[in-house]
Length: 293
Image (cartoon, rainbow, N blue to C red; front, top):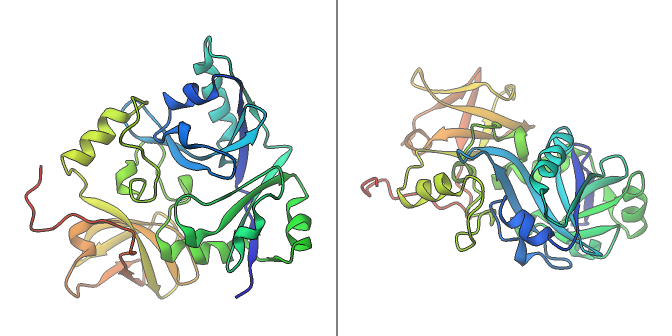
């Protein structure tokens, strides 16, 4: 299979530059910024003080004492503004680079050949199967990648890879100020570091993990029938047990109660479609026979 790339117009870039950039972000986001190195990015989230999702981001070493935060375009200006509020006396500057940089996902055999391209590039730290990502000057990513032999594909082609793997895509799949990281795979997908110091929302995140409080999860699902709109309720025997999130073709993600997703042959429906949950190999689910904490 040849390698392909999809431009990700819904993703953008913020720079956090300066001598204190590592310590500055360390106290704010869910992952350990000390792990960031050339070609080695981390995936992380900024949470509310109550531990609810605000923004997801890849933190990338861009050289010259600069981190790039690859995040959602629509919500990047608000994130940059919030980060600026937290700088106080830290030796950092925050800048929204959405007008000058764009993002592409590279996937398939040989995706790693995209490393070293553009302004910054990295292997997706969530799953190897997701390939690499390239940050390049606006309008240049496609030409750079095509010159290296990569074939362009629509965003739906990247979603067709992402969705069966059960990997969320920002607020397309996580409700802002409501979602919990551990319901959405951030633990198994390398988005949380349990050994780092405190960060915003850490207390609830840790309590959720160690008290085994998770009762629902974001699952990849097969859709038998016309794909319903995101937000369509999922029902089991007439009872609402979840909600559909992003999807394309016959694949989607759905937030489902664990007991419903594990049902023995029971039929889940969303609108007029049948929903069939799957459990990806990376996902760790609690033992249903184990007592709750």
